[in-house]
Image 1 (cartoon, rainbow, N blue to C red):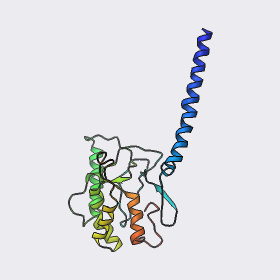
Image 2 (tube, rainbow, N blue to C red):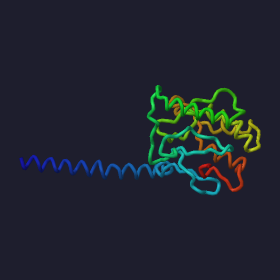
Image 3 (spheres, rainbow, N blue to C red):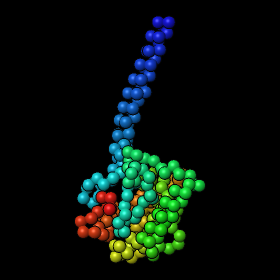
Image 4 (tube, rainbow, N blue to C red):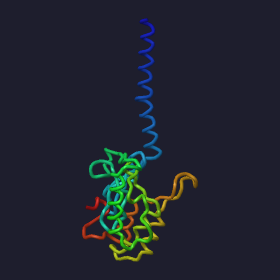
Length: 205
């Protein structure tokens, strides 16, 4: 019995050292050496060099001169990286129907010149509440509002969206998408901030 206990303890200790210490240290070191930007959190900086977020995490924008992300149920005010979550409401939920209808009404009021019905992604949150991307359709639907707020032509804003549209990985994986933070930073670089002293680096009130 004592011999078996000693063997079990040795196996446990070796397993803990290998999988809990050596393996994480080796993989972290390789990641930092081979993919330093990704391993460091994929942080994004504005034109002043200030870190304004991560390419992998969505954040809220509500000013008319910026593209808005999907709604978020992560945390009390949304887009809380420490509280990633969905609404957990099913398709028969009255609360979900009411909140979606309210979000749609607000969205249409904010985008009176938008063409066609609003994409469903703009009134429903993602599973994580932190989705940093929109579909090209979700971004292009907002072009008239952004162009009007920045006093530029819709064609110029539309071309910017199309130039930043990410294609399918390896041509077959995933769907075309647009990173909202990257797109808003590109707006400021190309057209300037729509507000004096403002920047897409901060979450618009």
